[in-house]
Image (tube, rainbow, N blue to C red; front, side, top):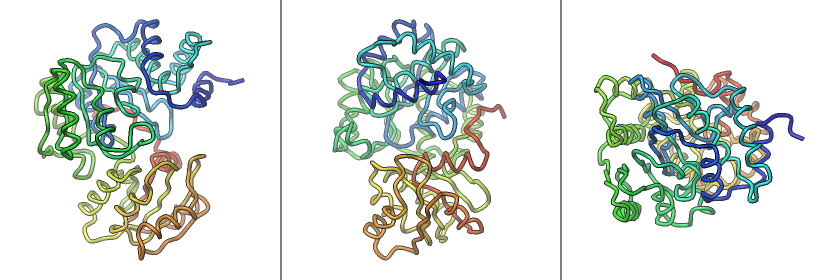
Length: 402
């Protein structure tokens, strides 16, 4: 028998992923959520969702607005998923909120999933905290994602690529159609220049909903607190989304928010010459390689790499191989972690003649091997990144006023 409400919540992962809005709509209706008057900005896409949300949240914080932020997954602590401009949800609030929801859904068939309950927990906390704005990141997809139960002031679709194909479809068009499912009647939708087949799907969906469509065609040129050319595009999306949602903020507020944003494991410097980045699919690996070339021109990385099953690891290897001098492949503390030997076999097939390859039985061993190396890079999975941050004692992101 679970000893805590949070343990019970983790136990609901046994129900798997069930896309659909029936359960979440019922939970929200019975709890009287969301709170009347709260305004939402809803973000879907394959890459850059979290960073785009973080930019908006940082700007709202600098503007003195009360704003909630819901993202996933967490890196170290569950509470990282649910925060406002002052703090993360506390352990006591997590326990109390889950206990209320657990009593509500007892005996439901089908039973609500982990993500559905987590989302409702977030909206319950945001209501109790009386936040004015909420920035929501979809969990997966969009059309049938639990977060799609709300009506936003603006919708954002970040770059779309091939990921979660077993749930969303095997082509860019099918995945784009699922992501574009967050577009609501008359609600402005913001996206950026993408491959034409994706833009066509988004244009069609916006047209059917009579939703004004804004396509960003140039990156933000202001100084940012996050590194990499791709973050300039994420920042541009964030600025356009806030404007479309009716937030016309002074330039100095926008600039300060963009500059002081914090978002762990996105080209994060752990020490001089050591970078941590949770690049887990082909598009994020391509963005990571571009960021590396920008910050370490002409230098190859000593890389610690670990990944989970279900991803196109070969494609990730091909994107990263040109910037790597030495590979250190490892497994880490996750039941989905791939073995170092399997990764080595995949790497040799994906990038023949690649740099030197070392395999390690544990993350501890891999990190020790690169202790004196610079420049070095730890990448491959957000779960790996979370374990590295926990070992470093850095914890998850805590909102702070600067």
